[in-house]
Amino acid sequence: MTGFEVADEGSWDRSALPSLRFSGLNRGNKVRQRLGIACRFRIIADERRSALHERRGEIDMLKFRRVCLEALSYVLPELVVSSEQIERELDGVYERLGLHVGRLELMTGIRARRFWDERTLPSEPAAIAGQRAMDGAGVRADQIECLIHGAVSRDCLEPATASVVHHRLGLSPKAVMYDISNACLGFINGMVNLASMIELGQIKRGLVVAAESSRQLVRTTIDRLRQSPTLTRQQFKAAFASLTIGSGAAAAVLTDESASATGHRVLGGATRTASEHNHLCRGSDDTGFGGDAAMFMNTDSETLLIQGCELAAETWSDFQQTLGWSACDVDRSFCHQVSVVHRDKLYETLKLDPTKDFSTFVDFGNVGSVSLPLTFAMGVERNPPKKGERIALLGIGSGLSCIMLGLEW
Image 1 (cartoon, rainbow, N blue to C red):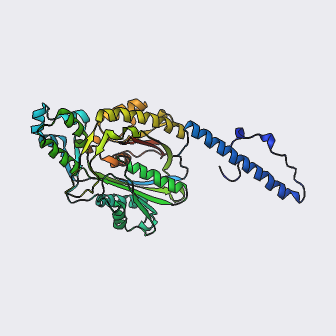
Image 2: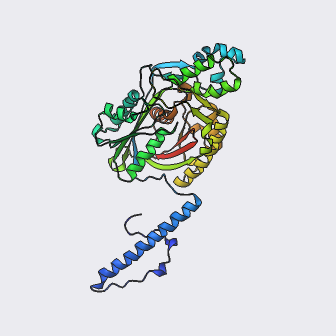
Image 3: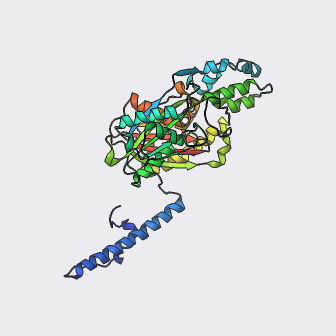
């Protein structure tokens, strides 16, 4: 809506506006009077509509008209660690609990994951991914006006890992930078933040990066399981998800449409939270991800699957309403990578065509906040979308939180 356009024909009484007869010198005053009345009616209509939407819970927080995705990138570690390798380290545990090697891949579909070198800090691959995205977008370092690091993994508790990435990339001192931490949703949260800033005209170009490191979590989990003489099946089950985590980095450049060369539009979407389930996946104390870091995580995977899909269904309903899409309007879809069970259950719940999905968990496991952008970037790289195709990004993370974004290529 622009200028003094009246909001909605059904939201005001047309007869309430005086008819205007323009004559002589009074014409300018009467035009201004009419426009002023129309403007006041527009404001009243907007306020009433907002109040109505608030009562119905229908505020469209995520709707963008001028945001474009300019480039995606990813970086993967060289070291491949198979699920069988991990299980071989747990031979004694498996024997005590009556388990068989092959269970990890059988239950999750995850064949392998990647680890960074022990000395690698998250900021290093995050900066590499960021540079690749800027190069792909044809954007100079001094043109980036906001940098967000959106991973669970961070160099240290303080300062923000974004500050290290900012320095490595040589970004402008005027560029805003900060970290976002929201479990597996940090990267997509970063995309939403940048898109909102672009939509408001605060920035023209922004960069979101993330790098996850799983070596420390998997190593600590194996050690704790092996060192527990009274380990039960239930305790093993709570640690099981930690063995699926992988490493990787991703980045994306978002721009205002006036600065875009691709025209790949970020249209918006929906977000929902079910924080009553924040206890279903809990990590250890907040620390940095140096080589000697020790961390662990307990997860109620079964309940997380059930409640996560329920939250996804609610978010999907909002998503469709916001963008005016139905399931059949989606040409390509990419979801957070957890396991084959989670993917299949999600698509069944949302009634989405699974043949439109592209997955990476088989070879890379669950890479936390990087999973969705990594999968999106690889899918687009291997099979470039056609102009006009509609893409759905389906993000979910412990907490529970869910964000779904729609793009038009």
